[in-house]
Image (cartoon, rainbow, N blue to C red; front, side):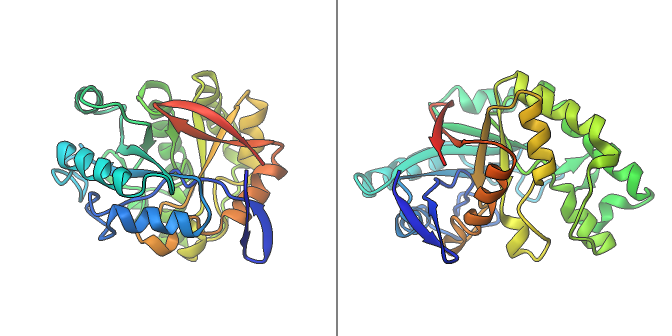
Length: 278
């Protein structure tokens, strides 16, 4: 695979498999702009994984329009043909709770990849300080991991996206940019074991760095546990909502993947993983 220059270091050009466009409620980016940003980074392919929120608590509930999304991204594919391979994907919040709604959308078209993510645990938003209302630190982390295990076991997804997203709530409530998972190794390994056993991928999400919340995640520690539990597939995702963030901090993320003992990352085509050596 071609190489590119990132932060002064020569690294393989790894496709970004977590990006958002204006088909997501929280992005204004045109699909073509996101894809051109990938081209500028030297990426041979990119996945557009817009929010498909079925949880009534979510700010994006009711925003997603499947047919408009599909046609818009097909148009984008046609415009960028020959310059970058455009994969059409979705990010579904709490897919284990909304299986019927998700399956109906997936039945209509041949999507390339589905990201499963946690944005809510019951009525608690995992990205804000309010998540910890009435909970101490340990209670909050354990509650989050229990929900994450349910998603891992029961949800329809290809990639478990930002599996440590609770870091955002930790940052906003406690001001911490680090989270030592050692005290929670058993419940975290439960999640990782299921993801590995189901042949799914674990995402390394780089958005924490540009949010001022510390390094990409999950940590090298968690990535090593995933490999020990039989995990084969990891992906890189910027979680970009702006074109300029596509592929951000991938050099750092790749260093973490290598340090954990992985020799490649995954890309998905028609919901099947393929290895890209690093």
